[in-house]
Amino acid sequence: MAVYVDLLFLVNFTLNAWALWVTALLTGALRRRASLVLASVCGAIYAFGALTPWAPLFLHPLSKLALALVMIYVAFRPRVIGKTLHLLAWFLLVCFATAGVILGLYNLLLDKEVQRNMLAWGDLPLWVMGLALTILYGSGSRFLGALENRLVHVANSAQVRARFGEMEIELEALVDSGNHLVEPLTGRSVVVVALSAVSQLLPSEIAALSQAGTNWEAQLDQLAANEWAQRLHFVPFHAVGSDQGVLLGVRADYVDVVCNGRTRRVKGAILAISPVDLSKSNDYQALVPLRLLPTKAAARVA
Image (tube, rainbow, N blue to C red):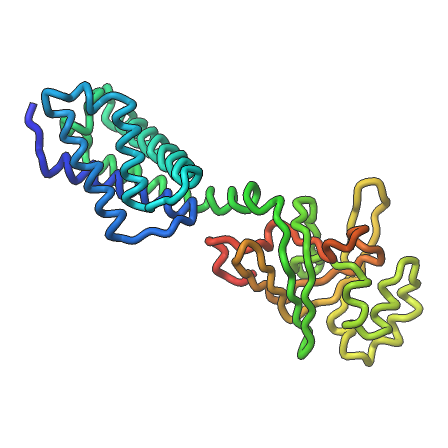
């Protein structure tokens, strides 16, 4: 069987570069383009070992694991063993996922049995590899964005900065996976805040309306001339162990949600005011829903 050296090098270099690049994205590891290229070249050159008399040595799992460690070190230069193992685990996971998609497409579209040394013997069509990487990139970006919100940020705290004209307030917030509140008429996002944390910002009339057991109908007419009246909304809610109710909401010009060093600005978000404190120790004064957390994919303003 003829072996095309240039094709063998190109395929292995591309797959190595892909796996290292995705590993860098997933882990947030600092990387230089030259380092990624050099590590990919190392992996591509290693592939030629399968064509030598020492092929069993190069194809041994321990040799491949050693190669992966070398590539991780060349690409990222981790300084501690824990970071090295973390990068190695992600790199191998990306390699396994990529190989699975490529082999699945190869078998499905070409109806051919996969040979053990397929890469070494040049039996992988470039279009199959290109299609596999396109599918992984297109589907992976959406999946990872959702995964980052649900599994990475779920246990984190956040900071909330709300702007009302010339006034601004900053609150410590808890990320609440159970907060699915929206303002029913406009569909605007809702952040629950404790009255005690925002009472000094609000006019006394608005703060009074937020108290538990307040008769809203008797006081709303008095607020018609107040400029804050245009910001008022009513947010229905249902909590575990309690009856349905309604929270008074105040629309902000915008809310900045800061989490894990990233910031997302949400225009027109509503602060639903809880008459009771959200934390006994006052560790946090707001509840932020998962969908408002900043992610790499959340570049647009909600």
